[in-house]
Image (cartoon, rainbow, N blue to C red):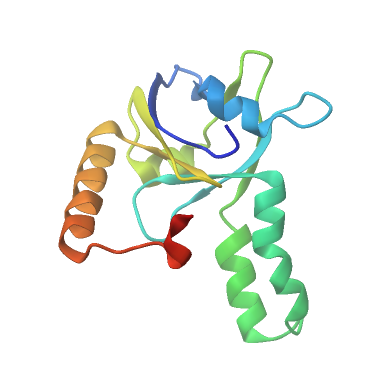
Length: 151
């Protein structure tokens, strides 16, 4: 597997830790064996975005082309970095979810991981179910296709 796929659920423990699903951990594992990612609140939905460190660095790279003191660069830098949290999994594959992110996503003791290809999201299970149902309804109505036919 080279992309984050599937829907997985895990328990959030009393210390705010959750185990990253094993297939996701395998994709996050660096050459030195560490599992590093960036967690941030979604600006569009009540969930936590989880980015592999290289993907987050690629996302933020275009900021380097903007004038360091421009309002556009300032706004985008705040949007990307101000609420982002670097995370590293412990030897059991658990990461600590910061309280601010747990509140943003409305997380309780059970969380749902949604694979999105190059990233994944962490949701409150009921909200994840409603989101997936809403996406499926939009897909059924609009019938979008992938550019190039997906071949």
